Amino acid sequence: MRIRLCVEFKDGSPAQEHMLENRAAFTIGRSNSDLTLSDPSCSRSHAVILQLGEAKIQIRDLQSRNGTFLNGKRISESPISEGDEIHIGDCIIRIMEIELESQSWTQATEEGGNAKINPPPLVEKVVVLNSWPDQYRAGKEAELEKFVDQFSEDQIKRA
Image (cartoon, rainbow, N blue to C red; front, side, top):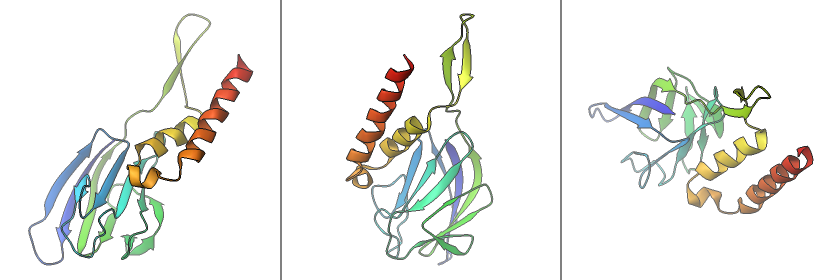
């Protein structure tokens, strides 16, 4: 996924353009984030932008104290698209451009070629959980293991 953002500050500081690329998830926060906002009303780990499948991208609030707002509405998670405005503290993040990466899988055909298929939903969920920062995966290990086990059982049944 590749996202071009423009960050504007309510204090009149010059706007900054950022390019986030080559990840399935981008963190936004005051420190140790892909997009760091030096705003005291922004939590250390405030929100995350995730690619879910080939055509879906969303923002998720990470239980921040002051909330995440999308186009003026407070959200816990919501799909986003080009032109949307994300408000975090005194910052306005404008989504200028989104380029999603293909997450297609291939499967061998009887003719010896490859056919494009969609990943099983379990695999997609495992990929998303694995792309989260460590502190947000904590407590999800059992869920992740359950999905991996279920996927393995489904594959064994098909063989």
